[in-house]
Image (cartoon, rainbow, N blue to C red; front, top):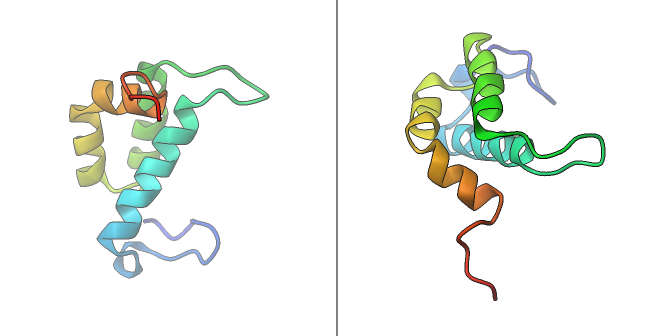
Length: 86
């Protein structure tokens, strides 16, 4: 959003809504997952990290508001709780 993004350094004017949504989903999912270098982050930590990114102009604030309003359900989905097997 602020022109510091990988790989092209595009600003908000060049980033379509679909890409903004997918970026938000990707970051949320990555922060919720267990990684070799850290455990799963609690939802409050995920939201705090993403809020910092919104404040820095790295994520779309209007899309983040949707994530924030639905954080509990999104977290359950991200860690695969409540999803049926198969």
